[in-house]
Length: 121
Image (tube, one colour):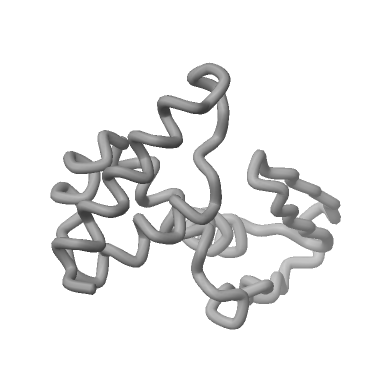
């Protein structure tokens, strides 16, 4: 199947799903999300978002969620704190995606800067 056929087929699939869903709050099926992400190998994100009538942030979120598990890093390596005067803390973050992050021990400004940088990536 040519790239143009894949895009046209996915446009049709999105239109069919939209016509059958029960309300606007129904999440997009994972198969449609995965197919949209696959098109990034052949089209720009703006071409895909325009054709499928989705937002750029949706496509980016889908792309990040379908990255194979072996490519996702489960740990963020932070610098060790050497200051004995820093307080010990325990932080647990639960994200809407279901991901969780646990942080405990001594925390200093270098560690916080590394953590914030890792969360942005």
